[in-house]
Length: 256
Ligand code: ACM
Image 1 (cartoon, helix red, strand yellow):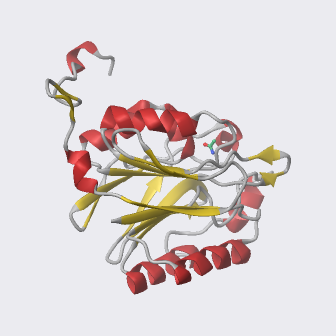
Image 2 (cartoon, rainbow, N blue to C red):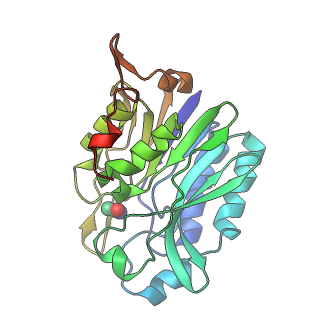
């Protein structure tokens, strides 16, 4: 299965520009799964709720329609972050578009000033079934809460898509651990560039269940990163001949 991330620098508030850039990539490439950054169509550093609300969309808006068209035409899965408008509120969400379905994941753990703009989401932390493999999604700062990836993995995720707008340099390393401790593939799609003095840290990557980095983007360059993966390998949770990542857990000794 060919999977990838598209790392680029969305232009703040310029949805036409951002959608055109992604459309160009999708026109020229067919993957089984492409992961785009968090808020890939709008940019990230909003100064007010009104500014954010102005670029937000419902789940059947123009961004979803574009992704649905490509998912159907190319028989592929696309995951990408967008500002989801719902009942006067805005969620920091991701669209998960397959040739047959559309799902939405709403970011649970909001980072810093996102708390002043977005409503924190209710997930859901469930993997989506796609043609014999299962896809889980977290968004950016969700990485800091290992329960999010663990929940997805315990529910059967083989691959975790991770759209991000990382401004700190930790998650790119931490996600190697998330992949190992859960025995899953990780596709981290971060962005690059700068908005209103905030610099994003790039370094998008695809990680195997053994923690190998299969492809890695630089900190500051646009890149379509592609790797061949076998999601079935994520079903084997043996760590040594005598250890199984899930069977060896001791939930009765953990905090809930
Ligand atoms: C982040 O959650 N965008 C850092």
